[in-house]
Amino acid sequence: MKANICTILPVVGVLLLATNAMAATRDENAKDVIKGEEVAVLADAPDVPPAIKRDHATKVIVHLEVRELEGRLADGVRYTFWTFGGKVPGKFMRIREGDLVEFHLDNHPDNKMPHNIDLHAVNGPGGGAASSLTAPGHSSVFSFKALNPGLYVYHCATAPVAMHVANGMYGLILVEPKKGLPKVDHEYYVMQGDFYTKGANGEQGLQPFSMSKAIDEKPEYVVFNGSVGSLSGDHALTAKVGETVRIFVGNGGPNLTSSFHVIGQIFDTVYQEGNMSSPVHDVQTTMIPAGGAAIVEFKMSVPGTFLLVDHSLTRAFNRGALAQLKVSGPENKLVYSGKISDEVYHPEGTGIRVTDQHAEPAPAAQNKAERIKLGETVFKTNCMACHQQNGQGVPHAFPPLAKSDFLNADKLRAIKVITGGLEGKVVVNGQEYDGVMPAWDLPDEDIANVMSYIYGNWGNSGKDVTVDEVKAHRVKAE
Ligand SMILES: [Cu+2]
Image 1 (cartoon, rainbow, N blue to C red):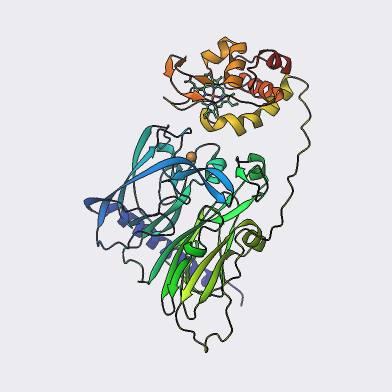
Image 2 (spheres, protein in one colour; image 1 turned 60 degrees about the horizontal axis):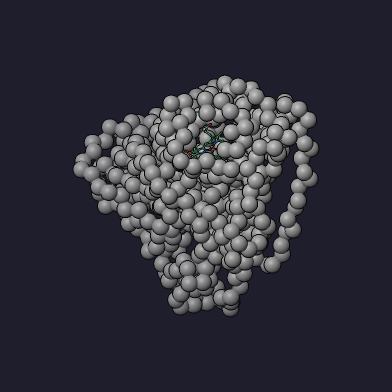
């Protein structure tokens, strides 16, 4: 049929009406009267806080504490996780559409890095990140009104953002619709993430983060809930035949899209991309983008062990994106007649190991311009986390490198500071800092390049730093 103006106009009209209806809900939620206040109940994965029973909007006080902690990534593999609340993923938050959230972000004094939070449930600059950059030993407060119902990701958005997220800084916040969610027998919290370690998959010991693998989007691990095997064996999710299960599934990324699937189950209902207004039914695999979420619901018809996977299958069977749901109860031969084996799980993959790929050493810089160019990467990989993207630093915690009188006064002292570290009181541009800067055991070339980059930018003196100068004046590592 040929579409003419008469058939198109009503369609446009209906679309406009729908959009206006949504905007109206949002405006109403903005006006909801806040009655009373309460402290949010937060939960560690795979648990979820209880459903909300209130029939009115309230002020919800959330305290979320950032911890940088060493933990298990896989058997024999340790990693320094950066967390919202001590675990990966971060604490699950549950509020109601229309609520006013008073958010406290506490950065534990033992931490080394500044952090902030971007909640996708927020209507405001940076999703809160613009108001929550917090130095170790400090606490930031901001508030927001939950205007849109849905399941939302939150994450750290401090530069380098991908590094903070790759280290585990993500979680979920559920903004329950006013009418609530249908009752189910079990609610679980599962979140996928990709991890980039210096060593290859399975390489033992404490593994540092690899920025270059992250940039290439080549993770060594893709896992649910922060480690290989976090939801298997004794930690498997459980249910009984006849029960319904709801899983709040998030994807922290930072990079990969998840093709979320439960082997041997069909999702009766999926709230795609975490939206509450138009669930779909009878779904096999649902796509969950990095920085996105979905709610899946299904009823257990038969017993057995069901595997949760990212259906990009090498991620599941070789990188770790595998979890178990153990269902107990009577067989139903009508629904499924076969014999189900319970022991098909290989939590550590097939044993295939990718050999470490040693990159060709980059060609050395020949002049100041080349040093400045190569120094940018060194800065972004090693220094930006504390001194920030444009060298502006973080008040009271990390001194500025931009227009720093301390830096510009003495080049040889700066070489010593960077190669040997700095501790105790230091005054930069009239402000006192009393923190610890680690010693950088980087090659002479990297030090020369990063210093030339810093001197050559942000209103600094433009001094050139050569490899020979670094060699002569550096503090040697023991
Ligand atoms: Cu962070």
